[in-house]
Length: 240
Image (cartoon, rainbow, N blue to C red):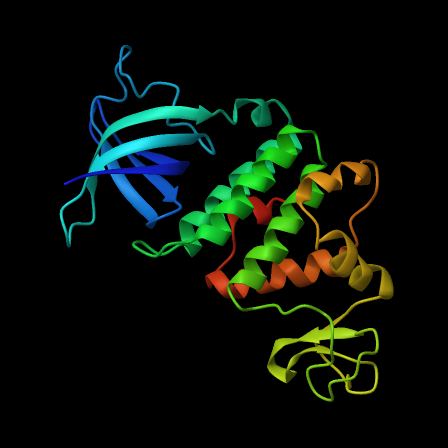
């Protein structure tokens, strides 16, 4: 059965002398792996389209129960080429790609995460600072995956005091009274950033050019994505 879908290209791997295996992230079916036959050939219709973080319209055939399908067509919708002319944006793009490869499940619709990826890539194309966009992506992915909650109320006592720390095992966000030890201490700047800045589309991060992202919040996000995935991410290890 021929299936059509809009998809982000995540990674491609050598398969044969003339073909790649391509890892896609689709809105309707989550992560899928397809064989792009003849994609290495100079005159292949796939050439230039199946590059990392490109948004493409694909047609493919995949038998039920099979790990691999066959890519029939990949029409370019939006190129990510401009991101790879800059070191910081290319690191962010590769890190998003790597995390999606690991976190997304095959056959599971991911409408909200797909929209998050699209908005994050678009923001970087519009020259929003990549580090801010990447941390925005991490926060919302962790939130959509149920790891983080909004810092509105204390997870223990329900107080509306500005949270002082995040400790998932103790109920999430904790007020100064309930926080005893452990967890991630966060200042008012970090909490306000989540409440005010991260509640808006990432395109608004353009105003943060030249500003340093709070290290305490970044550390908390990296720690939680590490534990969500079960191991380190190469792009995160070399730093942003």
